[in-house]
Length: 191
Image 1 (cartoon, rainbow, N blue to C red):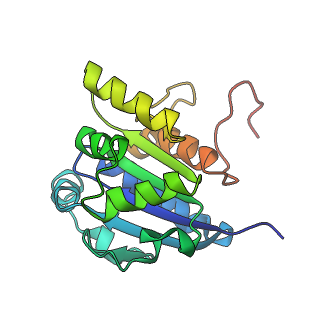
Image 2 (cartoon, rainbow, N blue to C red):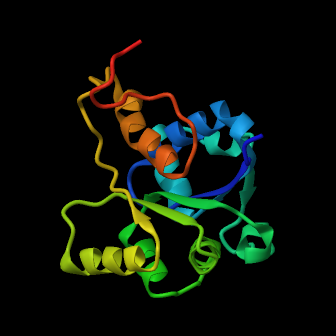
């Protein structure tokens, strides 16, 4: 029997709520591969989601939603045994705080825990262009064991709508997290 994953998904105030929505849709379809999926959102993430997606559907997801300062959340401690943390989308401010160990909310505390426990931290950074400060912060996180996965969609699968385009990023994120995902694979025959 395969190990079921315990995953934290954090959303920050960067533009790109569609990426998070598509990621959640995929995680729902992968429920047989998960033991637990927990969510934490910054205040700005709530506002960006409402603005970009014109709804508050994050409130009805079948996952546990924790407040940004709820340090009693299980993933605020390494003893809870979470495998992976995905920050999607990840703002440059959150990246900077993670890179420099500033655990001033549940998102940055959880990222610190994941790194110290040598688990998978995947930051789906959403900014363009990058400043040298951003690049240096990405370098620090990478050297600490994190994975920087820019929200840079691909087009060779010929996505037909925005959700399919976003899925080119989220499928890659789920691959990096170790999920078995059905998705477009370069140079493979389509079934």
